[in-house]
Image (cartoon, rainbow, N blue to C red; front, side):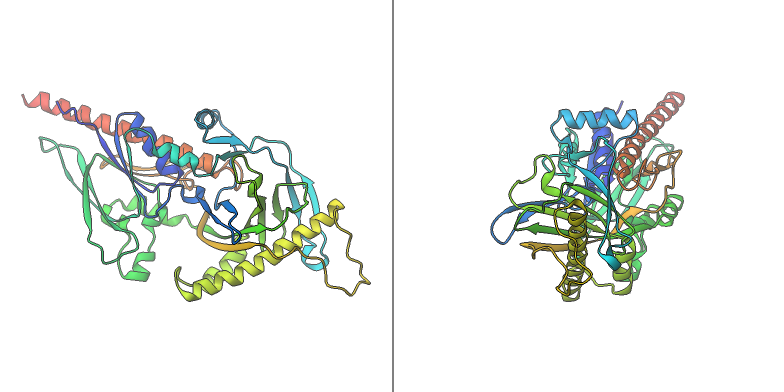
Length: 426
């Protein structure tokens, strides 16, 4: 009897991939995670650095917080809290109606209802680091998956499918391809593997094409995603607003603003803000002025976006402070320039080409699967979020948990069938 642990290849080290890997490892698998980037977290990633004056700064680049609407996810979040990697954000939350901000410099602010809002601590990706440390999980960073191959394993003709994963070092198209295997199951959590972008840029098919699971690949392609720009801002002096987080409605450029330095475990030096753009604003740049990361044109584009987003952020904050009573209202007879925030100590923009999924493709099944060959896909695009955009961490996590369970059921059924065939042949 084969007593070797079952092996799983998991593509992507965001929350979906690492929840899947951690769950499988706890159920007796060796889980090998392949991540094209150098860090963990995906859209739960954290950027750390220094401002020009040496101040330590830290920004949650994607998800700003997450909520829970189910008992299943509540139990998972409680585990993260006990491990010290998640905590409630005891901030002050409001919604800004900015429909008159551009034309009149006026906003309406409404406090949001009290609700438990969670963040990773001391960084948003701390949850992902905790999951990656699960015994049985191995993470291969800066490793790009470029293809898959499978074959029949076992001692008889009806043996289970085994998978190999073809990889190369990220950022080096001339690096040799390394084949790694053999895996009982494959779980893809990076939806980009099904994208035709490779074909457009490099004349190569998408990695999913080699897996020969078109029903999964086509479904992944069918779900497009919203784009977004993120602006990181470090102010010399704290902004005197009474709120730490703003949902922004009816503004052409800004969708969300948060004081990152108000979150638990964050550096308490300078006032640090994170601003998300609207999808419409991001799409206008990404599809109207597409540039490649790492080029001079991209750097110039990011400078323009930084200036435009900071100016819009400044207008919104000044209007909110006036509404709050912290600044005098501009007089219609005053010919002086309108009030603005002081120039920041630091600001930098980041582009998310795929920020939020625009559909849910597996609301009932909670994941995509081919149980004939042991190939699965999961993520926040499978389950509709309980609320936009703060329910995506819950959706991604629950999709991953159910994927791990399906993978275990698949391998158990294959093992059972193999044992029955072996007995029958004696």
